[in-house]
Amino acid sequence: MSLRTSATGSTTNAMSLREGTISQKQSPVANMLIYGLGLVLNKGISLIMLPLMASYLQPQQIGKLDLLASIGAASGIVIALAMHEVLYRFVGTEKQPSNQFKRASELYSSTCMIAVVISLVLFSIINITPFPTDFLVSQFELNLLLVCASLEGVLGLSTAWLRMQDKAKTFLMVSVLSTTLQVGLIVVVLSTQPTVVNILACGAIAYGVQFLSLHFINRFEWRLPSKSHFKNHLSYGVPLMLTAFVGFGLNGSERFFLAYNTDLSTLGLYAVAIKFSFAMCILMQPFGMWWMPKRFQYINEHGINKTCLVTQLGISYLTALTIFVAFSAKVFISLALPESYVISTQLLVGTLLVAWFKELAELMNIGVLYNKNTQQQFRVSFASTLIGLGLMWGLGSELGIWGIIIALGAAQALKAVLIYCLSQRQLFMPYQLKLLTVNITSLFIFLYIAFHVSDLWLCTILALLSPIFSLLPTLLIKEVNQWVTNKVMSKSADNDVLQPGESSHCGSDR
Image 1 (spheres, rainbow, N blue to C red):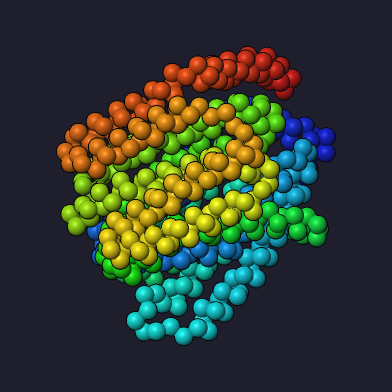
Image 2: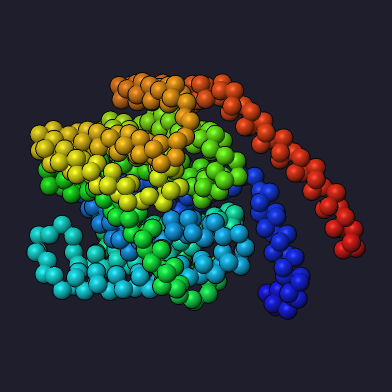
């Protein structure tokens, strides 16, 4: 570290330029794989620990943990104010690395201040409000949740900065550190005192360690943005935060309807099914973490047609993942969890369809965000959420858990269609509608099969073959073949160009 500090300014600039060049030459596929592994470790811990937790905890306790997680997610959305999206849009467009770091430091500082203010307000509300003795959650449990929620925005912005800098290995290192700590603490708690409070405390400790690690790695400067910049950040981020919070009505609030219309045991069965839907979203995130920060820049550099092609590849990848999880999760639940959770294998088909529509809307909203028209996206989300809440209220009392799943599916499908239409009006993308039709048709066919098939060997075979079958129409498209070929040839050419330079550099060192 002292050698780096004592280096001259010219050497430092040269090293930074060289690192930036190498970063730009890194394979997107390699970064996607590293991000995927990091996400599986960081975000998929609940799924990784599910068999162990199901052995020690009752369905009622798992249901309560899921309910608390939903409350924490809603609080985290409000505190974060979508500042990671602000980072993508305002910092990602800066040309100079020094300006990028300066603007990122301003965002980091303002995010920390916002988190402290909002968290103090929520802490006061939690501890002043009297709680009934038979209330589903306690004040102490909510205070532990608040620790995690207060750090959500800071952690999201810090990891987004790592992705913008293509520091995939650093992201993986932090994920391994925090996940190893959390898993170790949970194992100790389950073997000694398996209570909901102790498991929440494990999460709070892991969040704190992750915050300190990222703060040390990124080394952001403490500088507040100007009033004009701060106003622009809020005008862009607040509508996105409200959109995400309204989206919570279709991705979290159903737990309250389930707890009201059924019981915590049924909520526990739903929690198992939704964890595998979340696993599908995690597997989708490597593509999203590579594509979402770069898609606006991709429009400017490569044009709308190629941007549309990459988006459509993402949709095909999403469909294949959904089909794969539908069959593989059925095998996993049947073999790894107690028999009382078997009904979750059927609920899983419904929750996966809901998650597919949700991810589809995220992929196809590029036109709205490109024109910074987040207010219209908020209106679409608000209308869809109101319809979804109304359907859950009506169908939940009549059909129970399946009524709520049907309501969620209808609302998410409506939202995806409206986002598609709105985005096309803002920035027309020449999607191949025939391919979209094939994706949707294959999805419904294979989900129907997954719902009715009970033989585990057949499910295992279908988990391997059906995603490949669903991808065949995409692979046969001429434009896709050309795009993949160009990427391979471009990487080969880059390696040929770098080889002589690397040999010369080594020779000069000697």
